[in-house]
Image (tube, rainbow, N blue to C red; front, top):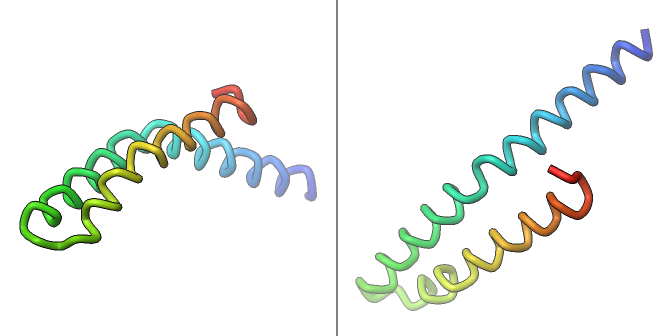
Length: 70
């Protein structure tokens, strides 16, 4: 019983990690572009978010490669 539960948790964890790896680029790109549009229209915080978005993507990729070997 416990082994089946651990297998389900392990499979769910693998799915989550793979989803983060696959969709992190699209999510960071979308957030960066929206923030850039906000900055163009006068929202000053958009500049900070637009410049941090690529850094977040790089950190996610480093984390995925170092700890999970994805």
